[in-house]
Length: 81
Figure (cartoon, one colour):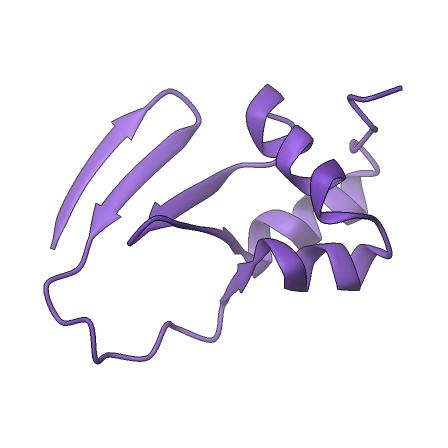
């Protein structure tokens, strides 16, 4: 596994493509469904750093603890507004 960090984004390359993603990582679609917002809103949060995530094999993944921290801290806002 190779990990490189660029600011609030980390990129992870996993050699074994057959492995299932860990259950504590959520896709952008799962985050959007959980918060009842659009995927565009979640991508906006990722872009401006409101929500931290990793890119695994070209797909954004948000750690459940990061999402819960943001929900409990009530520090999320819509960067599009």
